[in-house]
Amino acid sequence: MISILIILFICGLVFGSFFNVVGLRLPLKQSIVYPNSYCYNCQSYLSWKDNFPVISYIILKGRCRVCHENISKLYPVVELMTGLLFMFAAFKMAEFNLLISLVLTSLVILVFITDIYYFVIPNRLLVFFLSLFILIRIIHPLTPWYSSLLGFLFSYLLVFLLIVISRGGMGAGDMKFLAVLGFLTGTKTVLIGFILAILLGGLYSVYLLLLKRKGKFDFLPFGPFIGVGVLISYYYSTEIINLYITVVLK
Image 1 (cartoon, rainbow, N blue to C red):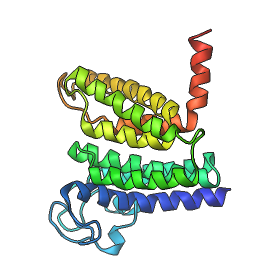
Image 2 (cartoon, rainbow, N blue to C red; image 1 turned 90 degrees about the horizontal axis):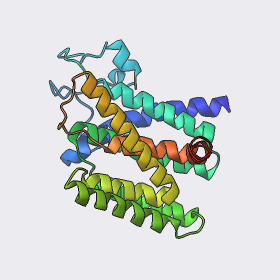
Image 3 (tube, helix red, strand yellow; image 1 turned 180 degrees about the horizontal axis):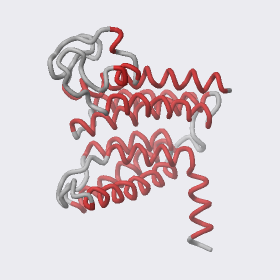
Image 4 (cartoon, rainbow, N blue to C red; image 1 turned 60 degrees about the vertical axis):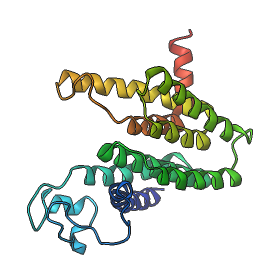
């Protein structure tokens, strides 16, 4: 078991490095294959020894080898976060459910990058993962089988109504992202995840306001909170419901 966890952690680091490239280039409609990774400040290409996930960042002390400008901390954070989440998926899930967890985690990480950097969740990204989710649910359907369709429609309409009521308080990207997650996880999981996302987003906004790092009307990307909320719900929805019944209803 320990060897599997280590292997998934290393795979997560590698995939996290790739996700950084995809997340930064996809919204700009750039190729994710060519050119090779390069410094966004001086445009110099990175050598193989500068491409080791997390390790290269530490060795270079967070600076480009050529121009010595700071490298975004988001790079090692994403790599390490992906490694830990892949390892956690292996710890929690087995067999085909592990594959589902890894694919779900990959989408959440990619949306985290694109929404943080560009405040956008690319349609091409969502279409690609929805296609994977459809294939997954054909092979391994929810019970009952139409739960995926209900999860998709419920999520889409829920955020659509919130957009109308709030007059644009949320974006269409959030609506489509939650709908795609709803197709994979079903109504219960996505609803709990969305409630958690609102709570996490609210707490983070209060935190920023207290530190005076954010104005009351500043825009805060909500996609990462949706992703984190649904991931937590995916693993712990039963425990969350039981806790709610025990603490609130009794």
